[in-house]
Image (tube, rainbow, N blue to C red; front, top):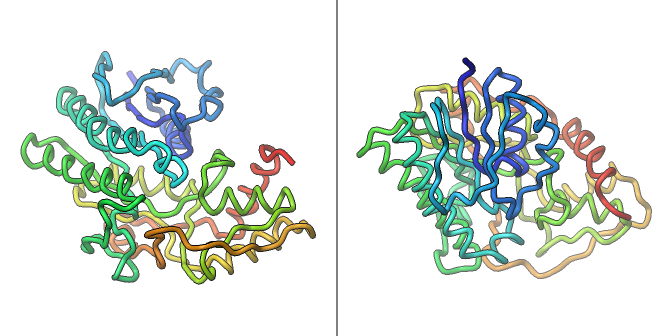
Length: 314
């Protein structure tokens, strides 16, 4: 009998790659998604398989999964600004009610559960790079607060279940990730830059472009998540790429790769509470998990560009 794993948010960008990885590792995968922001096309290649099943379900409602479960990976949530600004209540509910429901499943099944937190728990950080011990600088009532606080609550209730109910839990704090299956219209910088460059439009830079981000290729992220799940470490762990760059530098890289002479750069006002700096301290992941990114940004961007060339409508 194959070990069974439940993955919420299975039709999303990261969730679908997790489904692929666990199938490859020999697990029986149960995917769950309400398709609010997920895309069924991301997992439809798995539908003919006997070791994959899909539940179209909203986890803020009662969740029942028949049979044994060894592992649960909780990745259900809107995850881009354009989504959680448009769906603030759903974002808060999946972080709170959804996490509560899935923790209940983990408790009932005696399953190990990994929850997807985010670098957004650090807000607009006053510490750089961000270590797991940093408590963050978050505006709870700002426009980004619905996502930031949903994830901070997710961490709190997960640790509550871990300490009080003895549920075996893991917490991953995910930094900017990119790769195939990102939504073209999800509002994040990489899909925006690629789609604008391919269409010959102006790449949208907010502020003066001096704000920084670091980008981790999705295969590397999935490796880190898998290693954390299989480890004995129960405190939060940053998973991301520590190679930092400004948005102006990133725009130049995309322009050089796409090489569309019509594409330019345009500047717009900086959004409220947009983080000025974002780079993970991954020393804990290196030491405890033996993990660090392997895919170079040059290689990862080429692979991602091949995907966006197919899905961006010109």
